[in-house]
Image 1 (cartoon, rainbow, N blue to C red):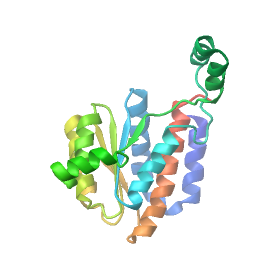
Image 2 (image 1 turned 135 degrees about the vertical axis):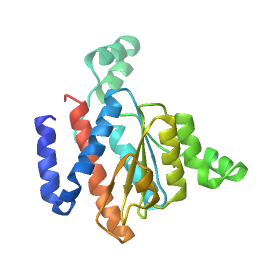
Image 3 (image 1 turned 90 degrees about the horizontal axis):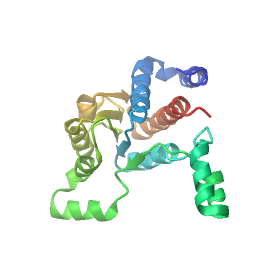
Length: 215
């Protein structure tokens, strides 16, 4: 673990002492994401309602700079400049390295078609079977842990050889039992669980970015 990542860990658990009992689980999810990206994989995320919004939020932090600027490597920048002149120079200056992540909530036409033609509870599982490959990571977010569509997505993830990760609360519910690993935050009320989830996934994104990028 890099020194700056270690400092982020210390600061995170200092700010969130009630999550200290979950340190092992949280760091296991962090390392799973880091290894996913180091091995050329991608992250798929799904949830409902506020957890749907959280999935979009995570994608936003992964696909562009979060705490780091993430400039592209010099060879890529030079290729843009050589191929496209002044416009290429603009792209070289402003584009950032992304960590590939997909929110499974974002495909309205597919979701509505599959819901209408087949089964609405399988819309995430269908996308997992289409996107996921061995070595990828699927994050299922559910405050209760009992969202059936999220549970099916994690079942599909494990069948596809992807890591199945749960982010939940209460007693972990169905997705907590299915997942390879996950974080069950210490709260019962939906809004409090979501507040914990925000802190956890911001740390997850910061940790991963710090470990993957040298900038």
